[in-house]
Length: 315
Image 1 (cartoon, rainbow, N blue to C red):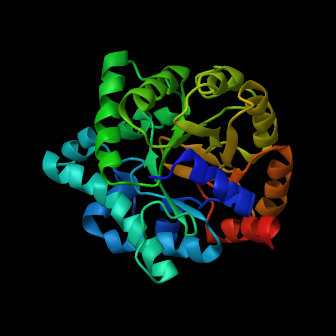
Image 2 (image 1 turned 90 degrees about the vertical axis):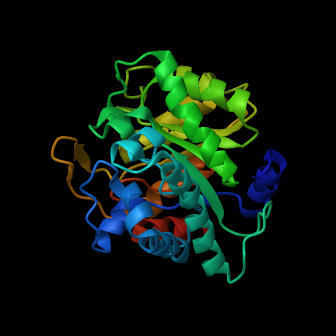
Image 3 (image 1 turned 180 degrees about the vertical axis):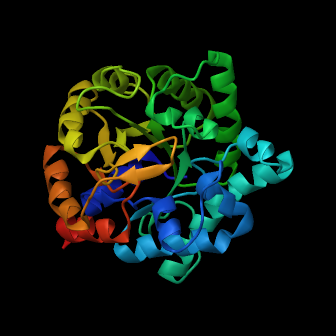
């Protein structure tokens, strides 16, 4: 796991870190059917090589950080799909080793712990709504107790951290309540560095209606969280959200990786609308100018989007 000083050294060297795009989007583009409650996490069991290849595609496009296929992978979710608990835990750890293997393939040598001169692996920690697989990560109202929410996240964090990932990506968080649970768990149970990114409905509020300023402020004094941001949010809202995050948490870096601008239908599990990869290069420069220093894409963005960002920000 990387330390804060190592991250600071990385940013001093590269200025802005280019993230990857939608993992499921790339897997579907390569012909894999992800119409399943486990989404891309199903391939951890059935075709881990496909995940490794998708990671490599993003690395070749210029990503400096790739995110594991654990977004929708949780112990309860995997067990509900008929996978024994011990194997479910192994699959979570495998999500990290698969990504590390893709990095090793890309750089032509094994990955050493603590290195910052190679692409970074961020372990995806999706919201409880991803386990429900009903679009709840775009609403944030789960109807469960705080203890249930805490236990759900605590178990997965413990297993993921055993795999020695570089950092944690707590992403697509739709509610302030869930953000508080994650903050407390990060402080109490791990030394791993993390970013926390929220799904937002406009340029001011996350999905449950809480102002993004309040959510960012929750982490201003949390040493484990080095960056706060937004993902799976429409690109047109990102600049406003960056400004509000910076105002509420001035000591933290800002991470942004919006969706392509298309609209998701949770019932039909389909995206509608149009987006062009070339737009993301110009948008990335705008987001960098606003203060973001980790920039990538989420749903319906692919290697072309990441290549456009890398070329715009690094030439």
